[in-house]
Image 1: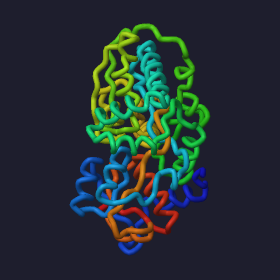
Image 2: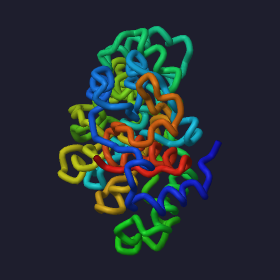
Image 3: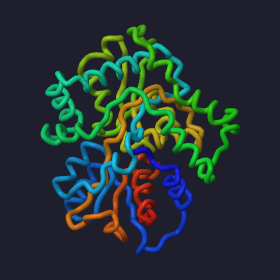
Length: 326
């Protein structure tokens, strides 16, 4: 079910307001591997993360809400590039390889190989990633309408610190026609050999971004003669900081931090592909049986401004609670 406009409005109106302990949920920032460990040690009451850490966390707790329960078919990870990177052949090669890899993942006859790759990529057991893969909707391009809902409500309640005209755009339509580059995803022919080496960022052990690993293992990047360097980051906010610092040319990251940092910090990136929809969840310790039970509890998120942070806030506002930084 599409996120209700009224729900997001309520979320954004109260996003930064104060809150008493009895009506709020406390949040701390942790990397997903640390979330699982801290849940095991009972140092936190739960966490919001992406797969495969959701499924891994079930060993020490349970899923309270899947992201599809909060926002059905919400856009999650995307592929973006820095405007400072000028090799169009390299960008076409990245998108071509990404599409090929996504098609490979979605083809049922490759199931066993996909599970093997997923285990290698995340370092987790095949039994874990096999279950986790069922929660992810792999895709090749994000839903522009969902991006617009998110953006419009941020703008309406003054949470964007820069006006689009200050960024050089006439308005929202102008921004999205530039920010979301669909032209590369439509290219079907194998691209020419890239001229430059490309630095690719991605999130550590993020199963959502399996297509990158498949593109490497199946030789799709080599097939187009690409020279590349891989760089790992802990979350999408860190990836955007890497873009800002000029450390990477292309990256897999969450759509939420990509949008916020593009506008608020004027980090010049564009989105050239989608990676997945859904695939996150709120995982809690035993004894927590409803969202209401989270009042006064401590929940870990991977970072402020991430998709997981946004999902928790939506669910909290729906239940009359607020999120408080601990």
